[in-house]
Image (cartoon, rainbow, N blue to C red; front, side, top):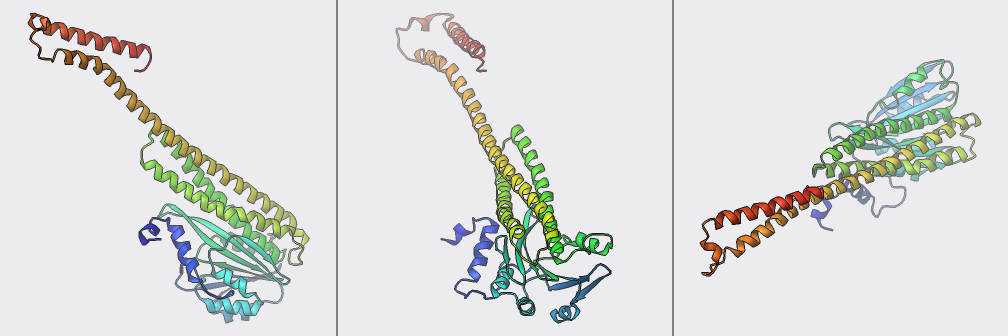
Length: 366
């Protein structure tokens, strides 16, 4: 495929091809970061908590993290930035994480999934946010590891999406501190899924506005807007559909890492996922209908133009016939010698035109 052809691909598709090519020919379990570096330095925040206290640490090195881990209670380690492969490797060694899971953490084009092992659970999700500069959506991969008394979350870039959970942990009256690490996993997944509602609400408003604009003025610029929404909904759909299987597998699998008391919350999470999937499908149908409406309006406008041109041509055909007859240079045409022949022909031509116009109006063609 030529370079010129590739440059016509959407931005996301070009990135996907570029990232996939980085691991070509390498053995399974090779730790290669396939994404784009979105932070200058990897940051690590550690929160140790139980029912009695919450201790927060900002760690500069992974050794500081290991030194501040508590054996009792729950430890939540949030890592922002995935370009430092050594940190990921040391985490895998310390918590005995399979090399293929570490590879998936660094491969930011993974589909949402859930893998359950004897001593930990690995989950991949997609965080969606709106980019105000490009006026489109950004998709970030979130990887989560759940152990017996720890949760490790991996983010590609900085953000406050998990900040509400940190605030709830500070509240001693909240349920977050009464439950274990499995509830923290649910809370993180719930925040990610709830964020879909915010993005979908914004997209839904823009789709309704576009629908009204197309009804009023279906100009050629609307096509690019429709294609933009179709790409965004396709990306969201790609991130959402596998999430149903992920949440369903998490609540259906029999594992000691998920307590029975968390099951109702996981069922509620599954219901939210289904609602998001249904909303995405509705938006997909709406964009398809908008495209049909756009093409139909363009076709109707073209038909109106062609109708006007046809009516004008129909009116001038008999007039052109009359003008052609009397434009012939025969010497024996008696009308040429009439005193009022010129005025008579004009009268006939105007009468024919008026009769045709009255006929078209009666037929409601005008």
